[in-house]
Image (cartoon, rainbow, N blue to C red; front, side, top):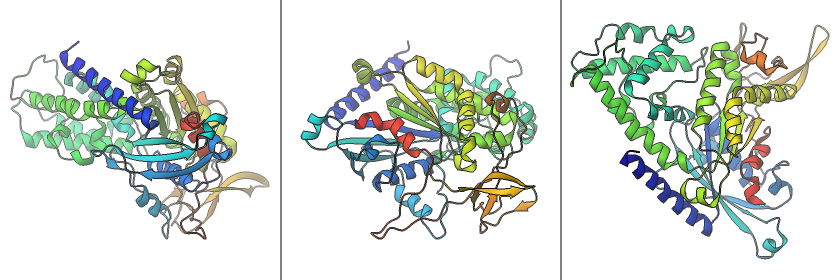
Length: 482
């Protein structure tokens, strides 16, 4: 093992022992919230905190349902080097006039939620209320897709990236990058202008793959799409090159410059994220927009399945012992949530969960084998629709009713955001295997604006309606409030 690996392992142990010691004084759980772009991370975290602070009705969250949840409030976060999750701003967006969805997660952020509760234990209750700190770490799922790059050198990554760009679902998006790539020789002298042009075209290709109608998921390097405060830095300015069978390239060549920057990306971007944040998580929720993949067709579904396998393989899962808590904490509970369940009638929710379980089946089995608990849910942290019925050709169809966002379309009909409509979204297949194989059912998925907030007489706003948010909270931290 290289000495650098020993050093990093020692650093992980140092952090873990420190976290463990702090947890003896004030019990703390570190909760990771992640998901690929547009999966609803910001909305989920805002809704979670708002529901707990507003003492909302959460029937499947035991501490709340049993009247043991006494108070929840925000405190200053413990890590002064990480941006604070802008809870107040996001809540203001959702409760504005008109309400609108907050901006997506583009960088890592953190929030400390403190929960005061009464224990289930008679003797503990006699000692007074107890406290649990929940340190929530919100980060883009795209960054997780970078972790496998730690095991690949520049040549291996280039070969994989170029092979992927030639796939039928990606080739059209990559045409400008391919055209420019064909004009350069990796042995040519390094040229900053050439590097920047190739890097920009490669990023354009990745962005096009992520956008509708492709909705592809496995698009590393993740910081190319969500650079945060690293935008424009040399560590994010590189692209794959075709080695064309050449085994060695001279110093000062285009290849050498790209290779150096790729290695800098691994050293200064990926590794610090893993060791400073990701490796210290106790619980994890992964939000997945399964419906967008179904809209994108078989290529998008296959790509999401590959992304889920890679993401879950990154987690250090398993049951925790005293030894692991001290020197290598594991994620012992994982929730996989298929978001935007409010875009479907409740009769399809079980099918949505079955499709997600099939997508992540191999990775789930690995985590469960290691001793972690894994739960799959169909979820809407904020419910933007209600359910109804419509009559078509004498048949009653289960519908969802809401305000589609401006620009959303169904067939030739285009919505302006001001019209409430009833939509029959269709039914998901009963066999999840059919969905993964490119099922061609008739589904109508459109995006809806947030529901109108309900003001409270005492000030503030009532918690938004949701679907299974309480079950997600119970699965993530319910055991720590017993």
